[in-house]
Length: 326
Image 1 (tube, rainbow, N blue to C red):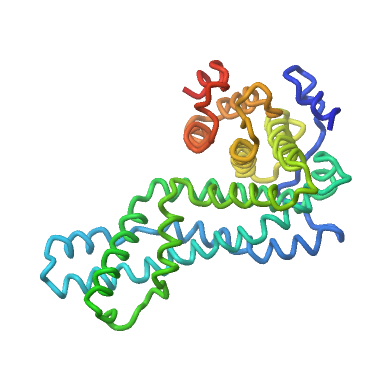
Image 2: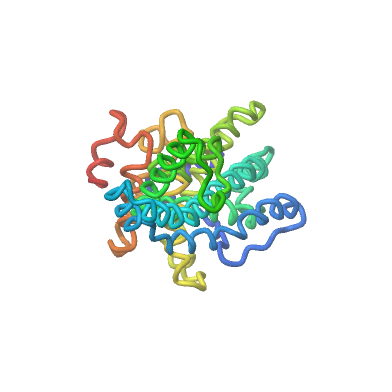
């Protein structure tokens, strides 16, 4: 790890990192396969979840009519029936977060366990590194879509208020409950969707729990993996010898999102965070890589660094870093 830290020092030696993470074509080797298969059984649904979330439009009109005419039973029924399928979809997203939460510790253990260094893990476990990158990509994309869609909170709030009134009136749901969401599940979902970035909260909690429950693994094993991934993504984006190997143009944005994702996760897990001078992440270099991209591509990622990190506003964050992100 000492050699890697020298590579990550704030000078031109950063260009000496010579790892290419094959985010497009990495296939599991025999030692990776068991963990890869477990994680893949969950990740196979990630694109479907994002596509469904992108199509989520909400029941705002039906809810407004029902609230404006509280004594009109027909409008109440229309709103309730409109919300039903939407709450089922919200439960599907919530259940998916729980599935990810269950596999993240297995993936982290495989990528952090000694005697390999973070560099060696990434070089020899490309398929698992790709899966971790895909989880980070999914996390940021999901939270980005959730934040720009207020209908999610509005729909679920209306559902909970209506469900409470029904329980108080001891009424049955019209036509049976189409949601499969009892009160206990609704409470957990409410906590999940109350977060500005619910998937990031899940991922940071899972990572923090992994560190706490695996006391035989120093926290540095995890944070060094994260900082190494940030450095590798940064180098792949900086140097044509690496990014010219991308077969798909979308891989550039994928790599940018993964870089931001590991920085934010590092910031949540590391005691002093990613922005402190003691951080092993070249945060200035990473921000520069982001700002070298077209603004329309990276504004959401810059906002993620500004608003979803834990330590950005700490006194220990250098003024130059704050100015870069202002």
